[in-house]
Amino acid sequence: MVTSINTNQDTASSESEGSKQVISVRWALASLSFSMLLSSLGTSIANVGLPALAQAFNASFQEVQWIVLAYLLAITTLIVSVGRLGDIVGRRRLLLAGIFLFTAASGLCGMAPTLWLLIGARAAQGLGAAVMMALTMAFVGETVAKAKTGSAMGLLGTMSAVGTALGPSLGGVLIAGLGWQAIFLVNMPLGILAFLLAYRYLPLDQQKPNGARAGFDLVGTLLLALTLAAYALAVTMGRGNFGSLNLVLLLAAGLGASLFVFTEARVASPLIRLAMFRDPMLSASLGMNVLVSTVMMATLVVGPFYLSQGLGLKLAFVGLVMSMGPIISALSGVPAGRLVDRMGAPFTAVAGLTAMAAGALALCVLPAMFGVLGYMVAIAVLTPGYQLFQAANNTAVMVDVLPEQRGVISGMLSLSRNLGLISGASVMGAVFAFASASVDITAAPPEAVAAGMQVTFAAAAILVVIALAMALASRATATRRILPAKVS
Image (cartoon, rainbow, N blue to C red; front, side, top):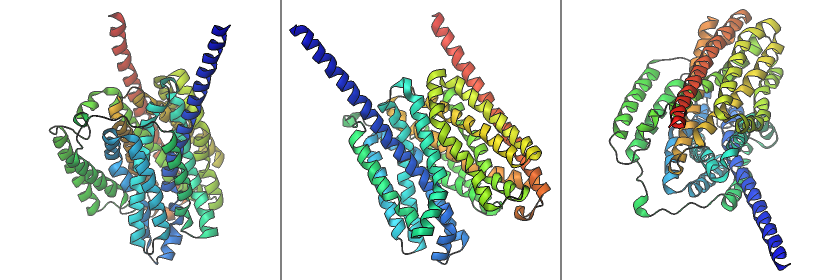
């Protein structure tokens, strides 16, 4: 009888501990989700405020666009470095510092008395966002069981889409009701909540002996940051006009990349171990991420012009149609992650890229046949395919990464996506302008805009097919590795 009572008590105790662990994991995921939401919101919410900010500071568009550019540059140039720093000093400690910096910088943005102080505060906010973006995916391996990695990646993808979709509408409402300061100050209560959740529920950093800590590659960090900054400025400055300054910046980026590779091959504790790129799966995943992000940016660059000028829609309806993509992304992220857990990352990545290829081809054909309905159907195919690919690709890369490399690999994944986005804005925009055969795209006739739309998404479909070929080749390589192991 006593034995039975003790057994029941032990069972109840173990069930209680299991329940607490599940709750703790959920709250840990909530803190990571808030971090992803805030960093994505910071990217999209400021764009809608540029006209109000130009008026408030009596500045030109070229000056106020640095409010957006400073944030993006900080993320792009530093995201790999902060991921590596998290591997060295502790991811929890650095993530808390990043959330704190993002929240404090948001307050400074809202109180900035001059434009250049606002731009400086936005750069600091971008540094905090870089930490949050780089380390959220890295934490998944420490908080979630391997079998649930896909679901966690899908949730983070959903929060990123929600932040992107919510930014323009929330920003417009806040500016209309409370002024431009509100688009930055709204981050403060959300940031405080994210900090408290992370402090309470994220696992503590494991203490390493001083001798076991790798050094931080300061020279490599500076070279990579300058290289990425030069590249990002080369493809974003000039608003579509590629001039001598853009060429100089591209050449500087090429020189910086060469010096970075030379340096990384010789330092004791490199920022990025070049041997990692010998892994065909990692190299393919990063390459596919760049291609796919380039295609998705094409929908954001070309879509508004086609809807307004090619189809003659009013701006309010254009905004409504354009919001469809982020809304579908937000709704499809979690189901995509669950499908990854059920079907496996390689199969789901191929399925997602196949859907994206079909969606890109549909954007090339259906709008010309059915107008706005054809456009919406094509987006409804392309966007869930993107979420499937993202969840599968992130899972495939992060699920078996060594703990001491999670931060830098997560940063590289985020960097490849950002490089695709900024490259897509420049390259796909140039393809659209060239195919439209118009010096000024805003004055192009509807027929020229429609032709540009078809050529742009034909090119986008080719990029997705290349990514699909890379996915199939990577899958075949992984299969060849597994078969000899089974035979032996």
